[in-house]
Structure formats: C-alpha cells, structure tokens
Length: 141
Image 1 (cartoon, helix red, strand yellow):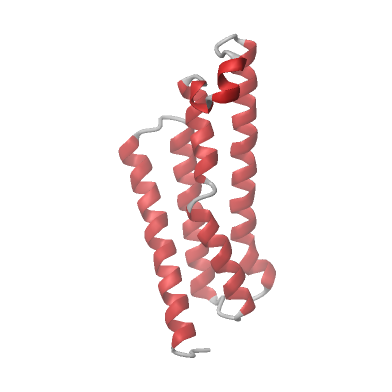
Image 2 (tube, one colour; image 1 turned 90 degrees about the vertical axis):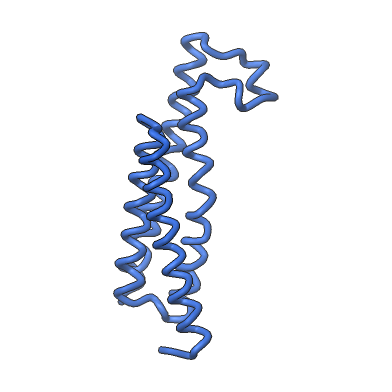
C-alpha cells in the first residue's frame, strides 16, 4: 500500500476541516454585516453568535475531536507498516461518515441523523484502533 493511498483519506479529512473553517468565517462575516451580532459580546462570549453561525462553528470544533484520534492512528499505522487494505477501506468509511456528519451539522442539524453519522464514525474508528492494537500487541505483520 503506497503512502499516498494511505494518506488520501487523511487529506480529505483535513480538507473538510478547512472547508468548515471557511464556512464558519463566511457565516460570521455575514452575521456581522447583517448586524445580527454585537462584536463586543462575541469577543468575550463565543456563544453569543446567532444560532446558525454557532451551529457551523460547533461543527468546526467537532473536527478536532474524533478526527484527532484518526490522524494519530494513520501516522502510527504508516510508521509501523500496519496500514493495509482493510485500514484504508475503514479510513475512507470513517472520513465519509465525518463528511455526512458535517453536512448534517451545517444544514438541518437533525440530532438523530447527526448522532447516527457520528456513531458510525465512532465505531469505525474504534474498530480501526482495536485491529491496530491487536496486530501490534500480537506482533502480527
């Protein structure tokens, strides 16, 4: 498995993070221009943004939760040479679940659908960590 093949899902996850960051900035600028926000208030209280702006901002913050464990695992899998086809397939499934989660979070924010997308990604990442740990602890190639 080439390093590029292994890193491609990680690159897509990083791109998602930047896309949501730009969406956050755009929504904040729009709220400011529409005079929907008191600048002095949001300077000390980040929850003072309008709900739709806070929703996108929360999605951005979520990109630094589960994905951090994904980044670490990907690096460890490369360094230890345990990134095989199963790893790459699971990595893509994880990233797709994060894209779905972010889409729901930034649009309808339907909690049940958002939770389901989160749970799918969580269990995929958990499986990836378990597989990796078992391979390392048992000395499997």
